[in-house]
Image (cartoon, helix red, strand yellow):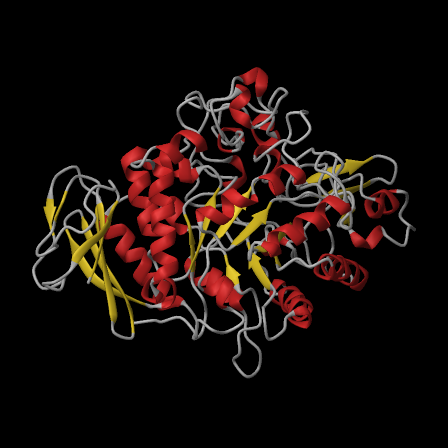
Length: 543
């Protein structure tokens, strides 16, 4: 039975709080160009504070040619003009902190844009001092790529540079050349870029694809993936044993941790959140440890396993138990049900399932991350072929890999363009925006937004929910039951994943317990006894 650390510690905001991901292009536009920006985020901070979150993470806003919408960085120490200026960023930091919130920025350590001055210098010739800052290799004997590595965006992970007669490596687009983190100059420059933002007051970093930052020193071929079948993402044809999750990544992470630790103080810890699409037993290694066993890696290696787990009580119970068992001593767990790269939860499990997912996410032990718009029940939005923006979809059409459907603008009201912009949105709005928007759901006592607000308020109010132990109480058919416990407070969560009514087994709920919250928002105060759950309903039971 695992329990969180002291809620009074400087770690409390990230151990006990809730992170909200903002995709800046799609959150709020302030100047009518159809692209969300920093001033737009500032305009909506009161909404986030009232929602009840503790920190917002903003996807990259650095200068970029936008080949991959900000994940191709051309300057790590400035703001792209489509989002604003450094002064706008400083004002955002101040406004976030004035509301008692924290700001986490998205840092992209594994690759730059091919327009970054470092790569331009590296590409200028084999004798360039920056040549070794990137992965340059001679062609294979047949003149082709130096090995079989694959790009995650389709095709080989190598592009030939005719001027120098060598290939450069890129895990993603050819516009995103991989940095060589084995070079001390790269390490020094990137760590100094992190310090630049820490000095401006940011509270931490989400580290994009951290597990990709170091590649095999011998550039060996990746082996075939025996589980690959036609129709899968072609990049999964090989097992990335030489291109991802290399042991040396832990050294990079330890250096990054030392940087943020130097900016932490008794009042507040600066955090590292690592993107780690890895099996549980591997992602937990990213908490790191020093010779004394203290955790010195990422504070929160992202746990994405709720995104892919079968939506069944037994499968989710098994997942939570496995994750809790794998966590190192003192590690803080974390959960998320969606992000800017994966299908939205409402499209994966349906509207009723999305309500259940909200209760699950906000009552499990650890730090939850919410994806903007999920609190409205937004689903994936179909994007016509002529309107596709995502390079992943453009490079591999028809495979269903595109991410545009989950990055559509936030609908705020029934005003034109849903109150997101006065211009033409960069992506189309959800088709039901006139009804599914913040204003409409604020006025509806039974809406998804009101459910999120109630869940977040309960979580903040009760220590058992935000920093208590997680106690599994078992699975009975479609019913999953667990408790959150701290001191003398015991709160039971019952989740019905099935299409029929189900009763909570005897002995799990105190006789005097009441329904504190139902996912339907219509049973508050009802005496629990042996509560009956309706199809796809969740209950929080306390006394």
